[in-house]
Image (tube, rainbow, N blue to C red; front, side, top):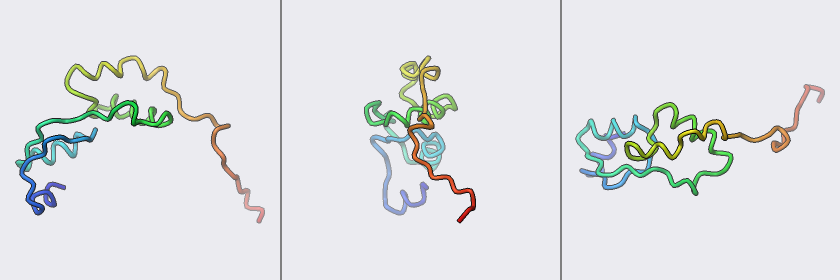
Length: 96
């Protein structure tokens, strides 16, 4: 990923909105400083997307500045995905 940034002439990134440590590490290791990492605003995360975000945070993805991850503390127990009744699925039993 940093190759295209170098090709475009990018020498620094002022604000990066990404939870991916892999992207951050790859960019910084290639000499492109990232001045600020911005956590995804909570109001931008859809209700049914909380499960994925919680899993990423608990797996070590970026969730804010050091000490700021406490905003997620204890929320894993309350996160709930969709119910089966909320999903419209047509089942095919091969009787076509």
